[in-house]
Length: 285
Ligand code: NDP
Image 1 (cartoon, rainbow, N blue to C red):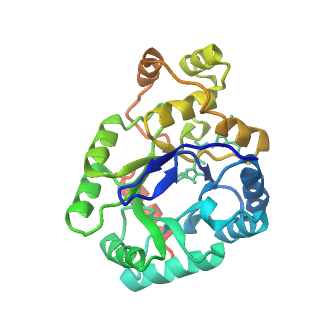
Image 2 (image 1 turned 180 degrees about the vertical axis):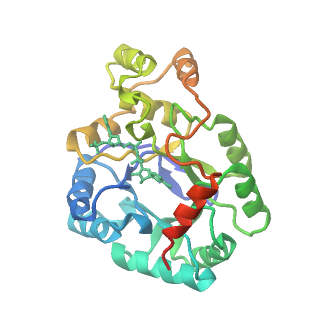
């Protein structure tokens, strides 16, 4: 199936599909089937990570699909490294090998933790060698992002951060735009939390367009220029989440959704020392 998915242009000219498919918390043994279904539904942009433990299964699904490499956009992420520049290069090679690819489209630093300045220097080199078309970061709060930009040669192409109707990141999006960094949402459906799928505001707006709550949330994000990577293991929801480009939310509807902002994460507090230690405890090298 062929679905026309709009793209955004990153700060180095690379085109990135504004809607992709995420595989966080998809068990490795289920991932090949899930990604095969997503590719069959029309997704061409895949988001995985070393920490998800399912890169190899994503790679098998890519290979089995027979889809030409240049029609795919594949992202993976570097977990918190102890090995500095060398460790980052080794981690990149391992991810590439597991995915069965000869280059990546986007490589992200997964967390602003550990020796990530060394990782960024290694990633700049990988990019300059042509092994990865764009490099970026994830979970960087504004102070960390600005500091990374001001001490390095390459400005991250993307910052993948939690963004959804309850945690909207509008001010931060503006800062990123000024700095040339594309915002990408993780958890675009708030991971199903805060009763999002029965939220009265989103439900009513959906009814007006003949669309589901998930479709309203994804449309609202993409209409703001935010890249989204919803995850679902179910083919009918994969198709539903792709079908968001045939309607437009009015200014009034966008304003109504803006009132849902809580200013808080539904998942992680990156400023909580206990959370930082927990994440660091999951370090791999
Ligand atoms: P999402 O916001 O995408 O929500 C996924 C949940 O919503 C699942 O429980 C899924 O259930 C359900 N769902 C999906 N579509 C629908 C639908 N149409 N109707 C009803 N329920 C639906 O959460 P994720 O955390 O998965 O975020 C998306 C992606 O972002 C991840 O897969 C990952 O790639 C990335 N991510 C990155 C992080 C980072 O630190 N950089 C952190 C977290 C995520 P079901 O599968 O049963 O359909």
